Image 1 (cartoon, one colour):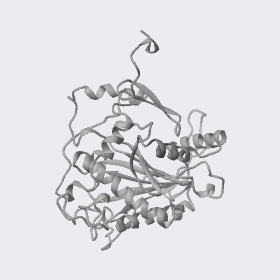
Image 2 (tube, rainbow, N blue to C red; image 1 turned 135 degrees about the vertical axis):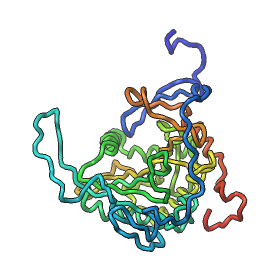
Image 3 (tube, helix red, strand yellow; image 1 turned 60 degrees about the horizontal axis):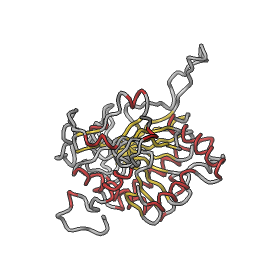
Image 4 (cartoon, rainbow, N blue to C red; image 1 turned 180 degrees about the vertical axis):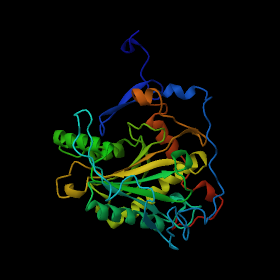
Length: 365
């Protein structure tokens, strides 16, 4: 029987369907009925809980010696240094000549890779830091966009949290890779956001913010100037998107109030993540905004600043979602709907599970 011949009413939370991602021009297959199947696949090792506050052998700690012999200062806040094993070099590397065939294209890649520690202690993460400490991190992110964006076309700030996401150092930190080229993900968003503005006269993600604020079906956390949602087209089980309510191109454009509210909503979103399975919730996150470098002076009104969180966990702290087979060869697929994921996250406590039996410090929550 053809799908459109059935007499059963369609239910987003029960029946398979595909959803369109207008930012990338891609589709995702949603199969909510698969959540009923028993899991007999790989179970991850439970994350380490007893992390020492300062480990001289951890190369990100204050006073530690890194791979090439550099000694970290006794830093008390954020700390930025050039990656000891960078994927991009600023200078000194040979560049390729003309491509030998139109099917074998190659081009020069120039850039820099930086590591930024959020805090001197290894046993804290962003949701356990104070709002003032998170605000310092946000200001530093904006500074990186300003400083490296003056030279490079794209500045990618990202955080890999947890061993399951390939993070080799249990210390709160992120990375910044700046390049003379626009990477694939933002390049797709450049095209589709520009086309949307041309067709509709308003930025795509600004329209999306207004739509989600009205429907309230996929909102996880919100405040006066920011909104955090599980996107309608989310791929990862508990993927979220963090968006300012007004039109903002880049992190440095945020007002003082927006930066304070960003610290607040970041803390509350990440507390909910940790509370979901009462674990140090792993994810990869990153910021996307208008391109920089030579594009700073151009019209980038089609862009809207946003952050993306991609957590791999699906059923528990030790069972993750794998992107293999069909996902790699055909189409991304998810079991939990965006609405179901948002409802689960939204209903979680706003107090971190590690602090639920301790007095609440209002300045930190």
